[in-house]
Image (cartoon, rainbow, N blue to C red; front, side, top):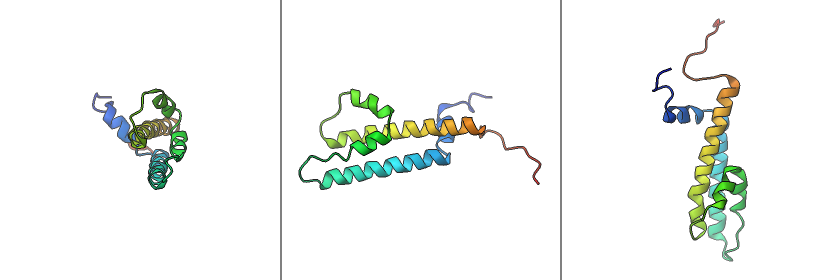
Length: 112
């Protein structure tokens, strides 16, 4: 393997092209969008909608919760998106490792 084939951006791109990783990322983005909309429409200021995407991005979101958070409900959105992206890369890496698809060479087969 050359250094180009082992580069981090290439590995991330390959991991994010798996179907389970893309589905997970789409669900997380949808949940974060729903939480933002629910929080924006809540006039009482007591919305707990952010809990759902936080649970969806576990375990990495627990580490983020230990950090000092920016003021306001909107500072949490980029952190949740980052957690979802890291988790999706990990899911894609696991799928590629478990299925044995490296993505660097075409599959060999009889073609029948």
